Image (cartoon, rainbow, N blue to C red; front, top):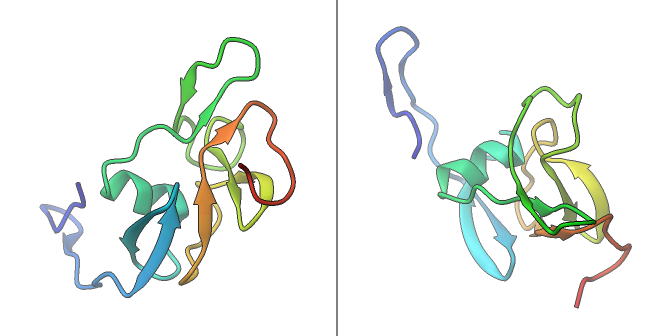
Length: 105
């Protein structure tokens, strides 16, 4: 789902050079791009579930102002994935409700 050939911006020359682990699955990513961009490129649209009704949420504002894209990253809950850059080896999990510190089970 990446845009490799854009009519205005031109061709994307960067190639995936990092691997992140998302809910136990290896996902290729470009180091430094927002986590949300890597997830969308991999076809992952659900980032968290709401606390009360367990409804799926994904990217909404994409500028770090809302909390729809929060996930648990390296054991830290409520990380805004739209403004957090990818680092090789990150462990990311879909956040359930308000999230919990440490590894989710």
